[in-house]
Length: 430
Image (cartoon, rainbow, N blue to C red; front, side, top):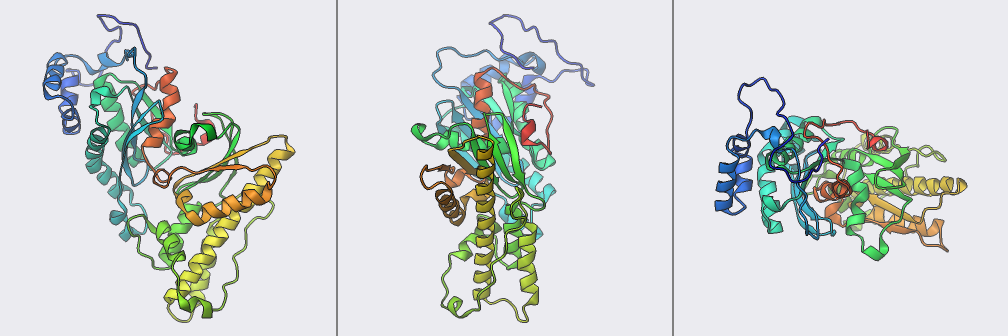
């Protein structure tokens, strides 16, 4: 465990044995192509003096963190690379987002019909150094002003996770900063605690609906680290269903991806829509059960398309997109109301609902969820919390924020902490 210690002239950490006879030094690490541009964002003379002092010091001798006294806030540099977005951000313990850099890869993956792991990994490797430097520049600080470094430990695509993990670990070890690995979905769930006005913060216990390309989860959050899964998907996630339906309709990804393209299509007005025969509403699967199913909804759209004798007109595409989106919203609303009812039967009263993840940026879904809560509890309003649109999709600001309580408690990860590509949110502390 990486722990804080009192001031000392000598380190009590013994270098670990490696296959090389010559230990890795901070100079060799800081001189790599990844670190030199980042260190360059600080004062040049200071960087030169730092490198001279650390020339022959083994890397493993710098695994302790000396807490700075007199600091009003704790500043974290966060890394996120679990899927196809390369992200870096700087966030403080006073709930300030000093920077939030997201480098998209949609144009690289559209031809594959989804995220291509090796392409994503290579793009992360190209983009991460620039993203980190940009995050520091936008925050108007140098790397030496950072107090801790956080990264996405999982879940996600293993190779993609490793890019952010290796960058974070190397930078933390080289600069003697504490390190914290974060659960990706926990970070999504806690984002409203960063962005909501203090007077309106969600209170534990609250319900969390996490809807993204990789997950569809309905959780009971009892604390920052305690989550109980109430419902998950039996097949595909809602985000994947949105993406595949968009591809079935032949939609271009645009700059925000296929799911966002489908949402935009639903908002298009077309005079021909009035003359089209109505599309029978798609049913909500597994009524009365706390479980989601979006593969069946996606299949219904594909089956409808296959029965068409002629290519889909633009009007038919709009009508199908709207029918799909409405059915997805009905399913979310039905399962949310059912979970509230079941919790009340157990005397668990929830007055706050947090919705996060990439699909939470869908305005139509937001409106339907608000209406569903008002219908369920007309007398006592249940507060509904969403992150800002730019923080619904993957970002490093949420990673930095989700690590903050551990940094402030002195609870750090070792530099050798492993990745967890598959990781249940119920097992955060394992």
